[in-house]
Image 1: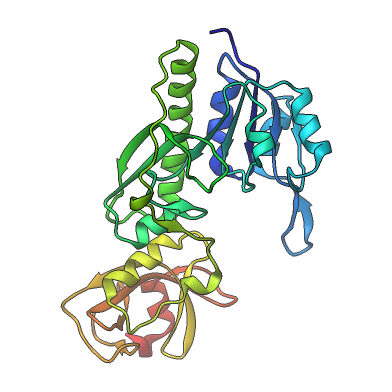
Image 2: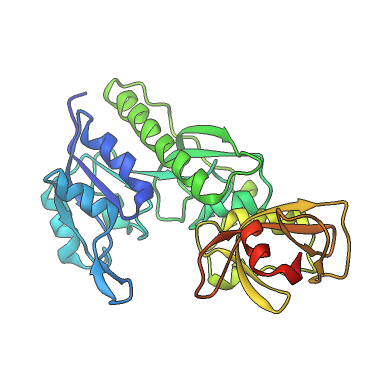
Length: 308
């Protein structure tokens, strides 16, 4: 098969390695689709996203439609005559009219082993659920939300202390490798037949809200420790501890300590702020109070000797 005319669609940092892999392939993208620039920071100035920045650096045309429902936006894509559209964390569903444009269809790189964790937050949900492994899936897109048949997948173990940010970065690099494998297989006519997903095994990964990261001290410590890992670096787990609301970046479940849920357990060393939970206790190892720096538990306790 000759080189393909491709379009890439993605917005955040997660998609950058995959875009770089496509740029370096025999099928560099004719254009890159990103979501519109968003205001950010204290001044709420418009900020370009990482994928857009990468495309600009590579001299690739960037398109930023608010949706792909308008006929004018679809006409712009059709004029490029793509053979393949590749998406990774784009953030917008492709309507049927766009899915039908490329001769080879549309591929999506999804950060889970589908059909587990379809949706917007697969990395976070895998950690929250205590999954021991996850992975990347290259799928042929259909109009559903991550429901299309699977082309390739690659599994990886989730480290016992790995947080969402760390797993995000590893899966992002895996996505680039999986895309390279898929393109090579397609160009050499060795791409496996798409395998339908088992809808009966599907689980859903919804959009995350800040309130999801609130720690409920009545819950078991093990689950709260997973919550801390799942919401680092965003939105970051938080809870009231001894009358002060703290953000919690690192924590460890302790099954040998007990007390009334939410109470500070004193006299357990200087390496952690220990809080009783519904089952066991949670050792807070890195925290931040409003308007203060992020600090280790040792530094926090040095400034709050009555907590030690």
